[in-house]
Image (tube, rainbow, N blue to C red; front, side):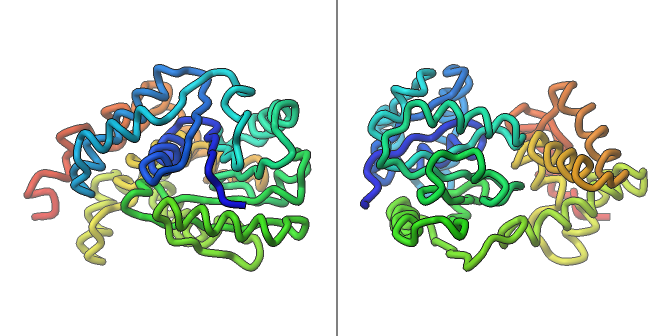
Amino acid sequence: MAIQNLAVIGAGTLGSQIAFQSALKGINVAVWNRHLDKAKHRLQGLKPHYQKDLNLAGDAFDTAYHKMFLTTDLAEAVKDADLVIEAVPEAIEIKAQMYAELAKVLSAKTIVASNSSTFMPSQLVQYIDRTNKFLHIHFANEIWKYNVAEIVGTSATDPTVIEDAVAFAKTIGMVPIQMHKEYPGYILNALLVPFLNAAMTAWAKGIADPHEIDKDWMISTGAPSGPFMIMDIVGLRTPYQISMNDYNQTGNPDAKLIADKLKEMIDAGHYGQEAGEGFYHYPNAEFLDPNFLKA
């Protein structure tokens, strides 16, 4: 089945990106979010990035933006959907509740995919009413530049559903990475999360300040970004939720220490680039200073 109609459930950092990228590539997109003002703000906030990174003309952005249908009515959002991509917060109770609500309004044809970064399909499939049409399509942040879609299902997923997901990913300009079986963190986060956790542990234990850790990594490896720069782009609510999930599942005291320090920042409104402050201050972030990496 060719995916022509997409519903994105949750217009957070990645949900908004998935929605706009799909609309830009000609997919009919409905976006559900509890707060439309926040959804509009995030979607419109993509414009300077698409213009800078892709030289996308302003009128082309506006055309794609106005093609999307934004709503707080879940049934209205999914009524024509060939594919639903769930991008609600990384808490299993929130996702389970959303799947229960979706079950009441989805048509039989609709494929359901999660963009979850921390849960695997086998952890969520029990909450789905269509196990043969459920899989994960995981995107990297800033998908217009880092255009990977990691695709994996469960043993119950119909192979044709995987094929449909791969074709959809190609249609919206992604490089599909088809995984043979699920793996915690997929490929990207299986490599990235331990790296970020190591940096956050050093910070949380008072070993060094975030800017110093970033400088060390960038100078020592030649990397263009440090771990705390990356976390500001992602937004601190995601690493907070990952740390809390780690603590709840393993009792790891370092994970709780990290989560507590991140929560202090989030509660103060300093949750990353989107908020204007995280580990750095925006738009004139400290790492933009030409002397940031100099003695």
